[in-house]
Structure formats: C-alpha cells, structure tokens
Picture 1 (cartoon, rainbow, N blue to C red):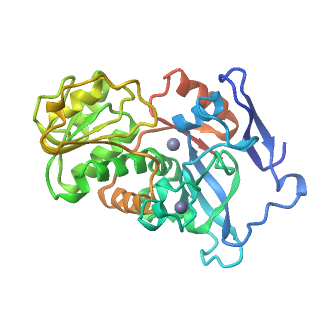
Picture 2 (picture 1 turned 180 degrees about the vertical axis):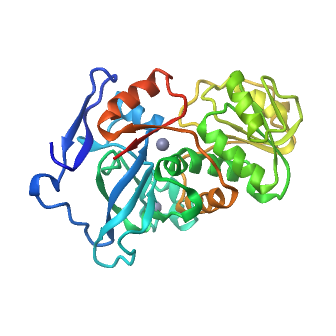
Picture 3 (picture 1 turned 90 degrees about the horizontal axis):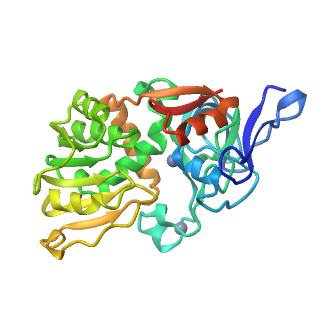
Length: 340
Ligand SMILES: [Zn+2]
Ligand SMILES: [Zn+2]
C-alpha cells in the first residue's frame, strides 16, 4: 500500500459484516494529492478520535447520508495546503469537529444556533472525515488549537465529547453563574471533561454513577461527592450523560427550583412518566443536539487554561475496525484515538 490511507464505509451493517475498508487515498504512489477548493484547507491528520456516533453510522443505527464515506469527526491535523481565500498558514495545528458546515442564513444560523441548521452538514457523515492520513475541511469550520493543549491524541476527544459536554454545561446554566453545584449522571469521557471545565469555572461537582472505578476517577478530578443515588434538592444543575431515560426523573428530583437538567446523549431509552411536582417551580428539562463553532472555540480555550486531561487509548489508523469493535464491546479503558 502507498503512503496515504483512509478508512471508508461502503455498506452499513453490524460491525462484523459492515463493509469498512482500509484503502489507498489520493497522494499515494505518486498520484497527486487532493487539492483544497476555495475556502478549504487540506490537513495532515495527526489524530482522530473514535466516537460512539461513528459506530452508530457503521452499524446503521443512523441512516447513511452518503456512501462511501470516510468516517471520523474529532480530528487534529496540521494545515498542509489551502484553497483560495484562506488565510491559515501552512503548519498551523487545527481541530475539526462534527459540524462541517452550516448555511449561515436560516433562522437557526442567524440566531447563533447553527447546530440546529437544517442545512448543516457533518464531518465523517455528509462529508469525508478524519479516519485518513489527509482530509479537506472548510477553513471557517476548523479551530486553531492553543499550544498548551498537549499532544494530538489527547486533544482529539475534546472535539466531540468535550464540545458536547461543554454545550450541555451551557444549556444547564453553568456558564451563566460564577458558582453553583452541578450533578453529572454517568461518567465517561465527555462527563469527565465537563467536570474539569465546571470545576475550573468555580462550580462544585457531584457525580452519580454505578461504576466504582468512575466514582474513584471523579473524586481524583475533584468531585465533591460521588455516589450512586443523588440527594433530592442537592444541586443547581444536572447533566444526564447516561442514555437511560429512567435517570431523567432522578436528575429532576436532584435539582433545586429554577434549576435545569440537560440530556447530553443523542439517544436515550424512554423516560418514565413522573409527577409534575418534579418539573414545577421553574425547573427546566432540555436536550443537547450537536454544538456550535462558538462552543468549540470556548471549550478549547478553557481546556487549555484549566489543563483539562483526557485518558486515551491509541490505535494505528489501519486498525480502525478493531478500535470500533472494542468500543462496541465496551472493552476500552479510555477514549479510542486513531493515530497516523
Ligand atoms: Zn462524536
Ligand atoms: Zn442555517
């Protein structure tokens, strides 16, 4: 095989049967590399996180928008070539996340909610992503990465799990007040990043999870409380990371009047009915969908300032299928990241 590789999905199916191919890409064997179009950059990919959404796309839990497609939407790379109208200097390290583009003119875009744009296109889903040695992206949807963030593999999980956790902080009201008490229900990588940011901002963090290991990690990261069942009326805001609808009334019960619960997952089992008293007194229940460029830029800046850490397990790019299989089997100790 040549130097340039990409991992493309040709047909959705449960992982053992999915047609996911490691193949040569443009630029191999003396063939020319893909040239970025106007407003685009070509990146030399250094690392790309493996997200559960990638698994949903492979296995057909979400319908494919275009096939074949190169997966991957938590990309750290260096600018290698730029199209016309792009000012980014070659060598600049940037990140690319789930939002590949938005229309810029619809009511959602004009009101600062490009994450809800009906014309939004997504990286590694509508357009080719970062399970590759190079990729092209819209320059205005890339994020310059502050230097103190650290090496590419540990930065990658910030670009999806981190940003979604940060948007959940915003929707739960954590960014509106300098102090408060936040409950995180479920404690994977996204929650761990959210905890570190919320602590940095001055909030006290509580973590409810069935996993004793996760409770230990939460305490190490400074959680004031970690347990299984949160106390009623004990926090000002809550984020439900676990995809378990039964936990929504638990979260509502835990927040004080005027508090908010944000559900950060893209899927969730049914929410059982609950008494109106759990919502009354101006409590708010809402979900999070995607994230805006502002969310990403703010999160990256805060992550650099607070020294936010992610635990990662790296895999060579050509072992993408193995990484996805380990994720599917819940066998990963940390966030999987593919490295070139
Ligand atoms: Zn993702
Ligand atoms: Zn729009």
